[in-house]
Length: 106
Image (cartoon, rainbow, N blue to C red):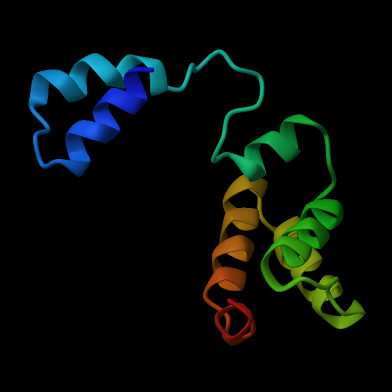
């Protein structure tokens, strides 16, 4: 309901800081939620997924296909060579999002 009120105010150009502040708590993300939105890599690592499984999911999500064996071998080697797996997998995700294939598909 609070989100609806805020949305109506924004559409009419009547949004006031206090109206937005009142509506905001209903939409805040709780840090103690086991699976937070916007944390795909972190959620998969917490679920004990392997880098190979995560890379495959990233490909399916970004370019709607599985990686070729050559792509998988290269990326898996790069991720496994890093001590910070999360950062390495984030880099794979960003590389896919910035690829020509992603831009062409979306």
